[in-house]
Image (tube, rainbow, N blue to C red; front, side, top):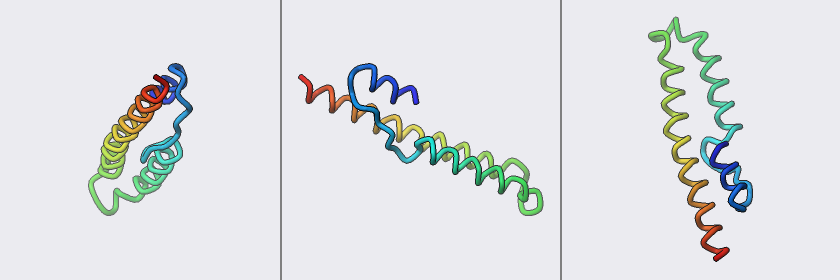
Length: 79
């Protein structure tokens, strides 16, 4: 969200794309919370949420890079 607002501040269009945009983060965490309720019977508690957090961090970084590159390309075209 911060990178998206920064893009808008420098004049680039709002960019909502990415493998971990808001709707993807919410879906991932919703599934992880539902699965964590039953993980006590299948594996060590906390495993599902730890995996979901790792996935969110990894793909969140990819999203940030994509949005920054898009803003940079927009600013380069404006020159």
